[in-house]
Image (tube, rainbow, N blue to C red; front, side):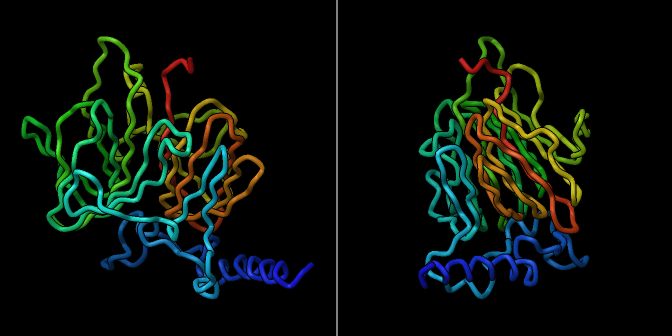
Length: 300
């Protein structure tokens, strides 16, 4: 083994050790801390993630991000933010796009004080989920909805709306051109995770909520999946559906293809059709992730 290879191996070994000791991807630090502090916010770790361990932060080129033919792990130290087209006072990081092979877009939108959204591309449907802060959603009739952390909205194609932020907020946004069914229009949906019932998951132990109705008019859904420490997927999934995932809380191990990735709150994953996939929760606190899944359409 040459000197360069030995240096890399030593650094990776130190990463695992330091992550456990210093609050890295195996940290058991809870996402909800003392009442009254800013860190009492739900999903605080998703917007304030532990980045690389301190002894590797100055290592040139270090990142946990990976892009392969059938999957990608995009970690926060790799996010590149720029002004979002058509939005005001908002920066965005596109994390999943058709350039990867996906048929949807997933991005993080960071809204500043007095910011305003733009509309999605023509004929594109949109889903927004509030990770930090609060926004006001207004439709063309003037009806408004205040969306707090853990709230969400589905906006059908060509549905005129605006999202305004008076202070600051962070949104995760999905957009896609739908595979619509004739004469079955979709409607605006506004809700919050805690309003949705827990669904049965035969053969599994995780808790599942679906944020969009399961009726045939909707061609995708957003799942919220909760795992207690030590719980894992029983089925080693291989299927035609695509996924876009944001880990909101906790940490664990994700298998994608033949690779195994330590993941933590703030990480984003893209899964192409038929990539083998599996998750197990680690640490001492709940894992929760938000998952995009295309549904209700024949693959042809």
